[in-house]
Image (cartoon, rainbow, N blue to C red):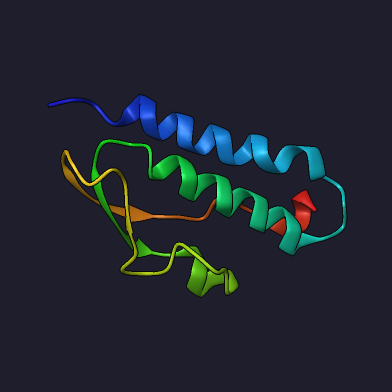
Length: 93
């Protein structure tokens, strides 16, 4: 079975890189939105069948990554996902 460690490392890296240019902008929703969008796009490129079990949507009322949402390419291992793309959005903003 293929390890998901490196693909998931890349997912988190891309979420951070998407938000980084806006660090210090003062808008936590903007920072969170950039990270959430990037995280979801990257998750959908990973060869697995993921299901969000702890979601960003409920935490910060984000438009995506809700509990029950399916992510991934739809092939490979079934995986439960807990997401929070930016830990401390106020501090980052």
